[in-house]
Length: 123
Image (cartoon, rainbow, N blue to C red; front, side, top):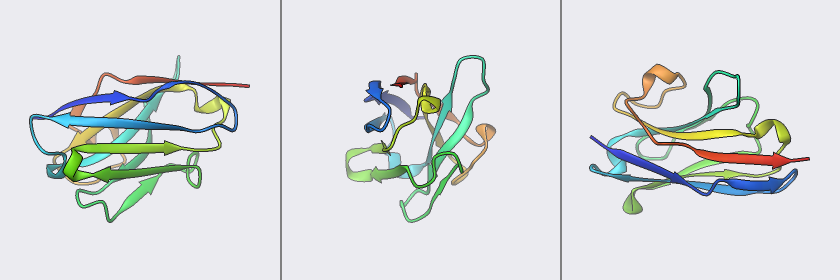
């Protein structure tokens, strides 16, 4: 099992940047492929980014590609989501997820979830 705790959310102006962190405990984060999802009010939880166990492979939703970067520091049991050029439509609760089955773009492909951190982008 793994427990995930996100941090780094907050209020930022459009065009600004935030870096989200997801710290894992219980198991080393290197045991899992990791993903970031986001959910806006009244919307489904959507995929944002994923990274393989070793950090070699990454994948991004079209809506964030070129602006967001997912990375991991397995020695620190931490996964990051660097968010640049933020837009109001990026406003959502962002969730960190861990999966046993490798990098996945689907909600059902992950086994463990964090509590979420709110990101609000003002215009």
